[in-house]
Length: 104
Image (cartoon, rainbow, N blue to C red; front, side, top):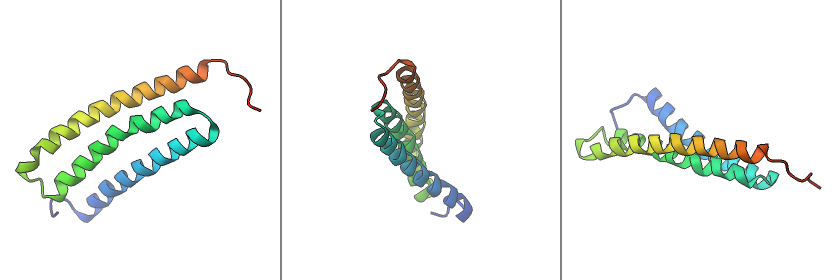
């Protein structure tokens, strides 16, 4: 756990917490506002959260060479996360551009 300084750990951990909160808030917004297509954004954020968790786990174990596969998994989930976030944004745009019935 000595691989990172305390301030760097604070950034890493707070980033993971922020992603969890953001996913929960987006999901809650989708439910409360009745915009189910926004839930795609929440799901699209999950791979980025996995990526951040991989980084924290690898650093927690002092960048152990036995866990080098976590670096590969982090890279993969970062790419997947970028793609899913892009697709989610496109889906929200597409759904928002369609005319809809007025809300009661």
